[in-house]
Picture 1 (cartoon, helix red, strand yellow):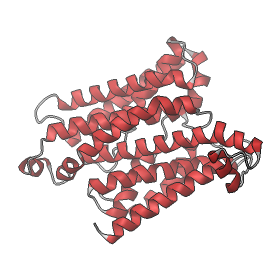
Picture 2 (cartoon, helix red, strand yellow):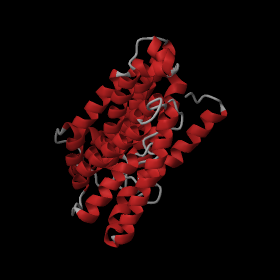
Picture 3 (cartoon, helix red, strand yellow):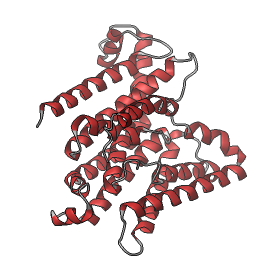
Picture 4 (cartoon, one colour):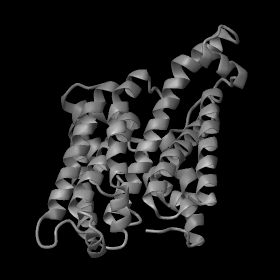
Length: 332
């Protein structure tokens, strides 16, 4: 256990605590940290109106942000390890788009018009998309190699985009409702959303963490991984299943948020190296920091309007990733 890794993990925990505090205190109405604490403790002190805003609106929104940020960051880390592709993320491999198809079909044909109503359909869409991608990549000689996974993901993603466009073209009434979900946002997320996704988040995290050593071995090459006693197919299936569940959690709860699953794994590797037993926990901390910071900034840039978190994650994430690339700190 190196000092550098301990420092990085400690700094990430502190950054997450600060991001949570800012998410609870900053918005259209600024609330003092002391009032935030009083609202959380429920001790009857502090501003009663502020306490209601914190407990009823900002706590659920922040909790969903923590879970979604962790889910997407860990999913991206796992997918990059499974495919040995540094630009792999849930969007590139079609999983996010599968969830989007599930939501647009729910809106257009199943009469789902609430955020909680979308969750099940998004999970189903993400799961079907991941199975199709793996099935296509696994067919033929050589099985599901990294190149075949990437190509299958790109092909399935293009097909799903076409399906989404076709549905929205023929069902214009679904367009307005879907586009607000598609941009990615934490606005309006309540405690019901958090209650529905946390069991899936826990399962996905456990699945991915269980193959951390296998992902380390895969990074050395498939033949080397087999020589080290790893069951490569099992690592890919278990890790891919965990990444699918985590992607479904994030997309179902907040829409297809861009860049978290791509940028955060590289930032984590730059800080603690390539060992997944360190990269995965650090990504789980940094993902919520990026998402909550993006969401908080989006609330205050153009008051009283909000810039959706999905827009802000790209604006914040791109400079980080460009800096890492320029310093040659990005590792596959």
